[in-house]
Image (cartoon, rainbow, N blue to C red; front, side, top):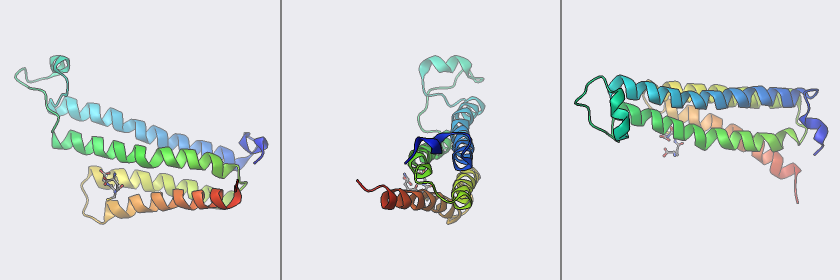
Length: 152
Ligand SMILES: N[C@@H](CCC(=O)N[C@@H](CS)C(=O)NCC(=O)O)C(=O)O
């Protein structure tokens, strides 16, 4: 690996920076969506948050199905986007072909957006499974290149 791969002169790195940042921002959006769901459903997890409730008889809950769906989606993003960013950093250092790398980054990002849509719209399976598997396999494909090129 060369430090020169991690400069804005390397389009593989700039493409990776763009798509990994976009994926992280998408993941951060799940926090905002959780807050919106809590507010719209008066489904707060902490007693002090009840001051925000529209219905003053609301009680704390850890089991609202809509809030929990967003939270599971968020957790699934963490399970997949964090590995993508970590593995991707090493992958860039293997000096992959520009277009091959770009398609890895694009496919991963699109898979996570589609995963969120299938999850939040509760679309029938296997739609969510397929979107998740595509992103997962994309990261595994990058990981295999790292493991084959960077042997200790
Ligand atoms: N932690 C995941 C591991 C398997 C996985 O990522 N499955 C995908 C495709 S079915 C998923 O969307 N799981 C739902 C979730 O993580 O809440 C789980 O508990 O389901």
